Image 1 (cartoon, rainbow, N blue to C red):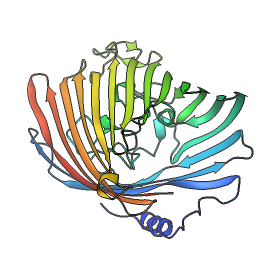
Image 2: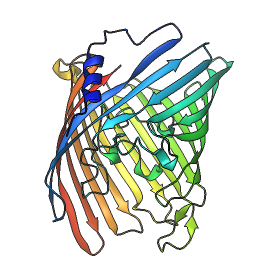
Image 3: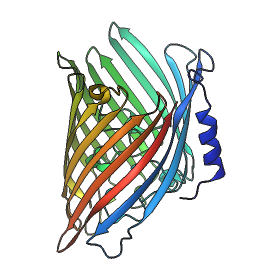
Image 4: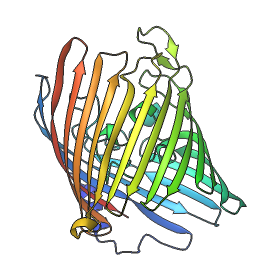
Length: 365
C-alpha cells in the first residue's frame, strides 16, 4: 500500500489530539474515525486469484451541530487511500467492508464524491419515554437499522461483509432520504425512504425499510431483538437480464449479553429471487468475549461464522469464518489482529477457498 501524504498527516494530527478535544463549544463537536489495515490472502481453487497483500487507509471526519436539545445538523466526509484486497479477492464477499478509495468517489452514480452524510434531525418529545425523531438529507440507513452490539462496525469489530450488516438487506449507502424513529420505553420503530442514484444495473431506484427493535434488560445483561423488512422499486434485472424486478428482504438480528464477559449474536435473512441475486438466505452468529476476564477491560475477542445459501446466480453457497483480537491502546486507539477463512462453492465449478490475515489500526474521536 502506498501511503499518501494527506493520510500520514492526518494520522499524525489526530494522534496528537488531546482527550476531550472533540467538544469545540457546547453546540459544536467534531469526531470521526481514521483506520489503516493490511490484509494478506492465500487462495486455492482459483488459479487467477493472486496470493498477495494489500492495504488501505480510510478516514471519516464528522461534524455535529446541536443548536437546541431537539435539533441536530450532522455532516460526515469520507476519504481513503487504497482498496485493500477488495478488488483482487476471488470471493463474493468483501474481506473489508469499509468505505475505501473506490467507494467514496462518484457515490451511487451521483457525481458526488467524499460527502457521505449531510442531514438535519428534529426530535419531538411526545411524553415520558416517548420521542419521535424526523431526519432528512443525505443519510446512511445502516446507522438506523440492522444494528448489532457485536457485529456491526467494520472499523472496531468484524471486517468481512457477511458479519457487518446482513447481506440479504442490500442496504444502500449515502443518498437522499428521510427517516422516522419512534422510541417508546423499550421499543424503537424505524422507517426509512430513499432515492438512490443507481444500482449495479445502472438504474435509479427507490428504497424503503422498516424495523422494530425491542430492548431487553435481564439479570444476564442487555439484549436487542430486531425484525427488519426492506424493499425497492422495480429497478433490478431478472436472471435472464430481460425485465426489471423489485427486491425484497426480511431479516432478524439479535444480540444478548450473557453476564459481564460473554455476548452472543445471531442474524437470519431471506430475500426474494425475482431479480438476479447472489444469495437467497443468510445465517450468521458468533460470540464476543470482553477482556475483563483477563485483566484487559477495553480489549475483546470476536468469533463469527456466516453461511449464505446461493440464489439464482452461479454461486451455490458461501461460508465465512472470522476471528479477531482487539487490543485497546487507550480509549481512542486500538490495534486488531484479524483472521478470516472464506469458501465459495459454484454451480458446476470448483470452489474458491482460502485464508485472509490482517492487521487493522483504528483511531476514534
